[in-house]
Image (tube, rainbow, N blue to C red; front, side, top):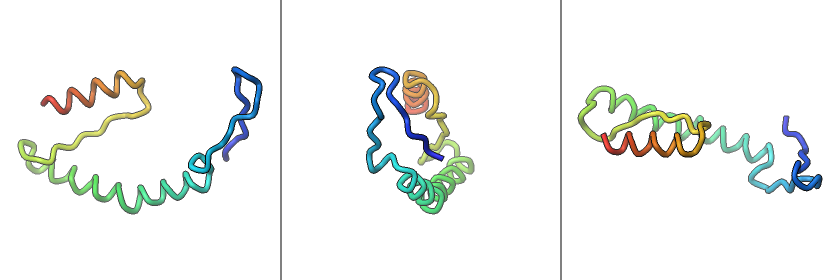
Length: 79
């Protein structure tokens, strides 16, 4: 469940954009699971079968600090 949040900096209610609403997030997750995830899985299987050919695929945890994510992306791209 989504919570109504209050800004710790200003003590005012946070503004919720339309794309931050629960219904929108649920739709995005449904689309991800039905359309994006299968395509990513397809390319990952190809990459595993022929590691020296394109496309190259990797997983990066986007919940890490931004600099760590960036370093991992650049490291992967430079391989």
